[in-house]
Amino acid sequence: MLCDVASRLPVFACLTPAKVADCRRMMVLCAHLVAGDIVVVDRAYLDFASLAELDRREVFYVVREKKRMLHEVVRRVPKRLLPKNVLSDERIRPTGVRPSKVHPQALRRIRARVEVDGKKQEMVFLTNNFEWSAATVAELYRARWQVELLFKELKQTLQLKDFYGENANAVAWQVWTAMLVHLLLRYLAYCSSWKGSYTRFSGVVRAALWERTDLTVLLKTYGTAPPLPGAGWDGNTPCLPGFERYCARAMG
Image 1: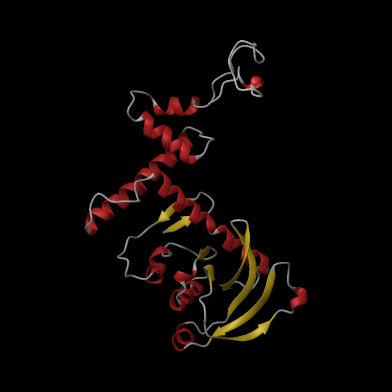
Image 2 (image 1 turned 90 degrees about the horizontal axis):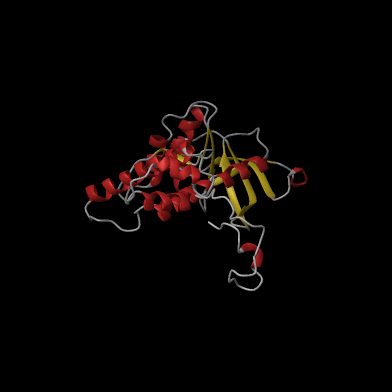
């Protein structure tokens, strides 16, 4: 799946059998990218032939390095010039038999500590841009985690945990239907100027589908109930000790 980091919306998706490696579909996902675009991918998409094609089209990329990747260091930035959390910044060339043939161009290799889920992790990145600062490359990859948040959103709000059918067509239909539902829900949230969480939004829509009501009106007024008359607890309404000042306030 190709996602737009800014809008956190899927741009293009293709469905393949599990035995097909992700890197074999990289150029299908990146077919519409033009010069100057930036694609950030995980190590599963590291394919030197595809990276060479992106470089030829002047599309910038940032990808995590696979373990035990063979390469030689051409030039290294002195450690005293490196920004904080960047461990090394090198210009390299692949030395593996196939990589060196399909991607003879030099690559930039950056090793940095990146904060993910509140924890610092050491990661190694490859890019074809030699002008960005090393910290920029690390931050670009950190933005890729928006994709993981999108997948979490899809799993929490759509029926993708189990399937009604077991054959390939049944699974494909359910996946594509779920993607279309997600797109419609996001569009409805945009039209209604929804300010709450997407999880709550999908729950409200799911409940309201069984009622004869205008969804746009409901969503625009949801959570905007005025407070009840009175400035506080009147001394008569039962409440838990310590919660008196909330007793006369609209909650919900």
